[in-house]
Length: 394
Image (cartoon, rainbow, N blue to C red; front, side):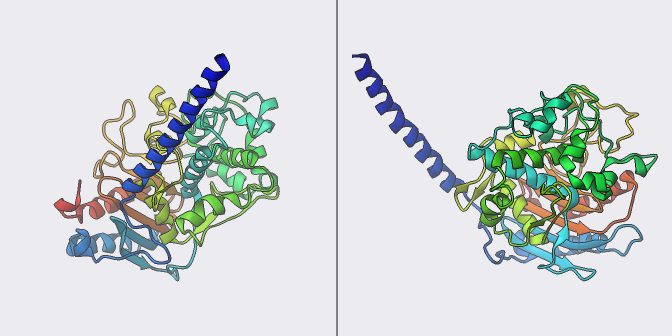
């Protein structure tokens, strides 16, 4: 009798799970709203897309204005899935790759989401499950979420206001010791805080994520998986990533892509992981990415030497919300749900979900002041958003 009831139970459960899966797939297909670019982005002119041509030209004049320390190489603007404007300078073109620097961190988060949907990894797992080299170093309680949220507790100075030579990324990218094995070099840093307690923007945390990805995929898959499961489905034909001497992918800092391909990462965020009705990451991944790192609720030391700790942060992406103690949003000229992928020397991926707008700027800025860099972003964001007609805004 018990065996018969068990059989009936599983006969009921399996069809229900299949039904739920089919319902999810049908829902995904209905939600896939914007056209996904294949070889070429579909286009609209400025007026068709809801921009004021006069105000948009003011934006372009500012973003391409010849400046001693700000040097825009490319601008791409996507609205509702349509290419509205692309412009190139300094020898760049639509097919020429540009260095992403830390903008690659946002791509890492997308890749982790893809792996989680496939059951290869989970955000709440501890890092040492996939990168056991951390275990003997006393940081075995660090989770993948801690790394995504930049709160591992590992000591790291991203950008020292007083002495750039104290900035860890300089050694990570240009020292022979680090380039032998970047994640291991990071893992050997001292542990300054218990995981999850202190937010500290750290390229080191992102480098450890690349090691986690490698460990979860195994040696035979990690070198090709990003292209097979993320870049190819997105149509990103230009993506290339450097490796360190140990074979670790440097997606957090030394990756290259064309601006139009970078925009496809923005479109993935706008579509919450859907590509032509095919789901690439879990349904809740975008909500997870948009939540401020819990450690930021503990506040930030105003005397902290690391100037990167000055804005709300989600899962490897910057947010436009107030942290405790902030007087206003980081970019009050933009909607509160704006998302930003940023890279040193002026790389920008701006995503406005309500307006379905994607803005990509690649650049070769030499400005060192974070205050000046942020003011520049304020200026161009205000002009770009202000060039949208009222009806094109949410």
